[in-house]
Amino acid sequence: MKRTVLIAAAAFAAMIFAGCTPDPAPDAPLPQTAAVEEQAMEEARASGSFTVSGTALLDANGNTFVMRGVNHAHTWYKDTDDTALEAIAATGANCVRLVLANGIQWEKDSLDNINRLTDKCRELKMAAILEVHDGTGSDDPAVLGQIADYWTEMKDALIGRESWVILNIANEWFGSWGKDKEWGDAYADVIPKLRNAGIRNTIMVDAGGWGQYAGCIIKEGRRVLASDELGNTMFSIHMYGAAGKSKGTIKSNIDGVLEQGLCLCIGEFGYKHSDGDVREEYIMEYCEKTRTGYLGWSWKGNSGGVEYLDLAKEWDGSVLSDDWGEVLINGENGIRATSKPCTVFDDGE
Image 1 (cartoon, rainbow, N blue to C red):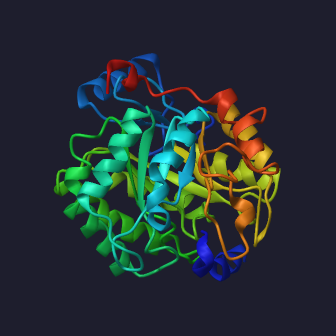
Image 2 (cartoon, one colour):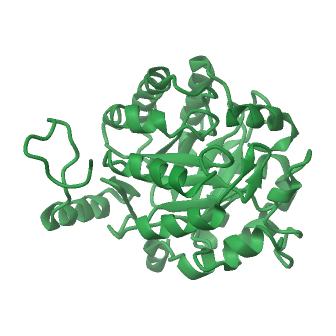
């Protein structure tokens, strides 16, 4: 969401699994039993990958992994990577979401460049979430297809790195609200192509509506998950002035996805934005209550009037912004208080 070219569009965007029923639908999510949970843990260990199990994300040791992290705008600030990643790791973040480009709008990231970034994340014991930003707001399935083709081309940056690299295919692809089937059709088309290319990493899919329309996940998420032969797809809502405007909205968005038996994180959020105020402290509180991951936008480098979204005033993190950085990093339900490292790094990953 971010950068000057996206501000106007972001403003435009502002525009049960709750127990057993007597006769559940055939495809209704079932409660996790101890045996099912143990089986999921064993499968995660055998796969050597992050693995989705119902609403939980398991690491490659089979332990639940709850994302507590930050977004870093690599594509626009390549010369800051090492400084920024080291500073982000110092906050206690257990993951970082990295802005990349496939060449549609910005300079294409190479295989070597991606490997350098994810190697640095491994060194710093942070999971890396990779996303292509060039299709932001597009409704064109061809654009999503181009991004999927890019990941197929870059598959060697993913294969063999499944234990600490997650593939968030495309940032905020699909700007429209309410076109659930179109969003679902496109993702159900590209996910099998990624799997056929040998990519086995956990896949993350952003909501439509510039990331803020959770309804498409609630209505179509299970069909998208079913398109993944590995069943290893999770979902992301971005919470700004639409999806994060009130406690009730935040709760209904998160609950609505979890009640479908789907794995969720809040892939971006701020404390305010051009489309309205955000209840950032409640987002963190409710994510902690539901064991839902969250990643704040963004470390530094926002421009064009949204500089307030900078978490840090300096790339090295020596000074955090009072209204946003201090809250996300040092707040009651912030990163320092709630983040737990991914256990694969205990094994020397």
